[in-house]
Image (cartoon, rainbow, N blue to C red; front, side, top):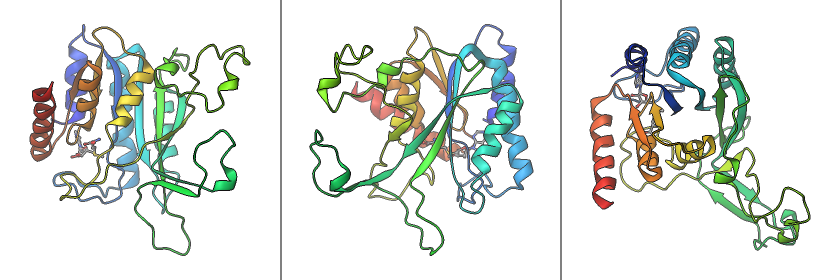
Length: 267
Ligand SMILES: C[S@@+](CC[C@H](N)C(=O)[O-])C[C@H]1O[C@@H](n2cnc3c(N)ncnc32)[C@H](O)[C@@H]1O
């Protein structure tokens, strides 16, 4: 069903509130979805997303998180910020701005002494841009909105180990081999050999990391307004948390249900 209709319905259910909303909306870049028209007037598009922000605020817990993944467009690189601005205008605070890095290249000389990578190395996948003006776009934003901007997060749940182990004990905060990952998240796409079932999916590691960062709570509910083929649902199954999602395209829902069933059958 339509996410706005669902959010309105949820508002009627006074005793259900969401812990985490994690989603990637259409980017208004003319992607060939089978049902949704991804080429709208920019103001119409921004108003629509703003409306989702307004309605989501009413059904999100006071200590809830809304993670919004949105990519750049080369023609108007400010669109993600226009959207973030609309969210803040209606009451959200931007608590974190995360960069989803899809591909990265290291040069041997820039790699520290303690790192095992010694050679020039490129990792990840991206769609090259055949332009003399523009660099290929290898990242997207994940805006982390909260109601007050002061939500305590489970940073170590997605922490990383120290590269240089001598840091442990040397820094007061470094009592174990785990440190803050920071806001650059390298998450490569899985290579898809067969025909793509959907033109714009995100890796399930994105919702997985967002939910862990928010913190796993007993009986928590996660919602993805633009569920596509169910990546957020699959992340929730891995994490053992309850989820719900909305999607207007019955073909994508069918694939999402198949994906969910395959994972559950394997448990
Ligand atoms: C960027 S895709 C999300 C893909 C998803 N993250 C995944 O990994 O499968 C956006 C999805 O939103 C759906 N959509 C568009 N308008 C919608 C609406 N009003 N309510 C619910 N879903 C909608 C589209 O059909 C599309 O599948």
